[in-house]
Image (cartoon, rainbow, N blue to C red):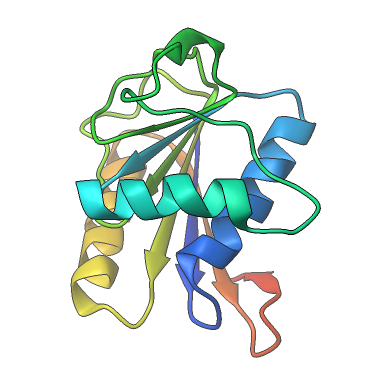
Length: 148
């Protein structure tokens, strides 16, 4: 099981998440995005439709329905109704256990002490569960650099 940690410093979640999801879909995988609260879920739902003038990411939520058909599914829980191989955890969402996906991806705000503390706790939990963990940090130019 692979667990990736993406430490946001130069860009917002709404700016970074679409590119990570595009890469996931390009590999033929489905994704679940587990969000920490309803307000952020609504914001991400809107952002995935409008993040680029010439593109959008097909996705759904429980409110929209047809969960099993969605290539990207946004949720507040640990459900995986679309059979996703990749689980993104954002805005305080945490994995209770590292099962049900091939890859877990934490994306956290480096300017939020609570988010950093949660990421550190999840790093320790992933290591204790025997997962392969990787830490990525944004450079000054916004590029991802592997740090651990």
